Image 1 (tube, helix red, strand yellow):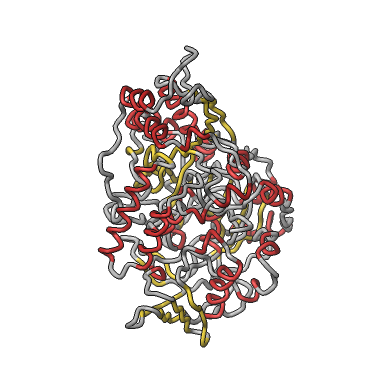
Image 2 (cartoon, helix red, strand yellow):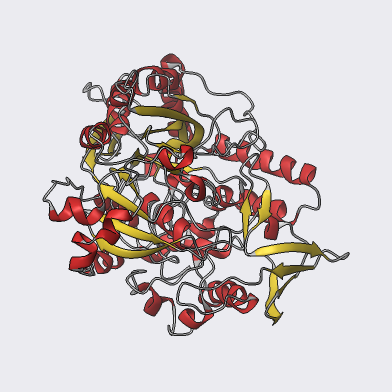
Length: 608
């Protein structure tokens, strides 16, 4: 889910509540800002063009929140650095009973929460049961067929299911929270009001200690982290308005790492800079164009009364649109080759299946399909009307200002659709506005993106009808697909599951509630004063992300090159947060939040 980081709030009022709860940061003491203790800190500063809204682990929205929470919290299981196979996390080991209905986990000892309280298996049970009891839609599909989850003692977790499932080892991407924190909240509505700061309590390698919304947030290292203390003392996330400002800050040494560079031209401009290393990760998220499928046939849509354009219900219209889009041009001209043509929504090499009869770029075929389906231009204005002289094929088309490539892609797509008699009204909005549009289903088409978790379970879950109003982009509904989703979770062998996952990809490709436009690579760069980066590689990948990963790898090993070589010198690594804030260095900010390299995009609906 890393680029298309989503956990949903179900209504605009929920977003408004989050925005209205802007946090007042804790003031820095004089010693912190001017004393020698601050000067001795090793600070690693990350630049990004996405801001944060909330750090509540149950209701976070986009990439910045998840990259931060990955530092503050741990998951029960994690993913290997090389191959992304399931690996121990807060669970040391596990076994499944012979009947397949009981998973027993040995829970790690000697771990403490950041408030000094010992971590135990009871915290894991409390986290999982809270999700199940409260019906947290964004996490429910990580915990299928659950009969009970108990902690018979401090170091044992027992998860029993109503039928065999391998889901516990996918593994669940759920941050484990302290039982003594969850017990403070009456229900999920009450818990949602907590923004995850300032009283952040986690078991991770860093703790969030300062947050100035729209500007920066700062984390301090946990010297007692159970995997070993990080080699940096503090981690600062700094927000920029655009890539140009971020790249300039990188080249001037104001930041140490530029994350998710969207401008290909600016990324290419780093070539030959002796102070900077640019890096291209393997495709780890996809960009899609979604069709609003919210109709009265979907229970959630009927209940909420959301509107939709009836032409988008016609599979022939969606098929014609796909024939009209030249994906290769989007890869070559919009992404300058830092992407590849997309097909299905499952893009992990281990699980991806090429679709039968892939749709090529063929405007003539698009026109023929629309002609045969009865969509004619009866008034000669160049725009087709619904069969029988109904409303014109004129769609509201949303693209994202946070990602210029979607704006540019939208220009191409608008022109291509016009060539086959479909009119679009492009509208570029920031992600805050797009989130509101999404919640209210007030769109016809939009371009956004999804991240790719190591296992396909999460991505596949988002197309179930039950996820309408939670994770679903389009409120797509197909009972056969929903049944297959349950079957893949209950598959007894990997081979059986791979076959089912392949069938599900083909169904989505044929039904096309959304069209995968391209697979995107994360572009990132760092200053050469730093070393210790480790690439996390998935199966079949030739490169991986350097810092924000599925697991705790580079964050524990990154350090000043001078410290690694023992040459001494200034190892402060950029400008500490207190210095550049007090010194008045301008930080340009953005009103919305980006998604291209995210795992989740929004928080869950109140009613699922």
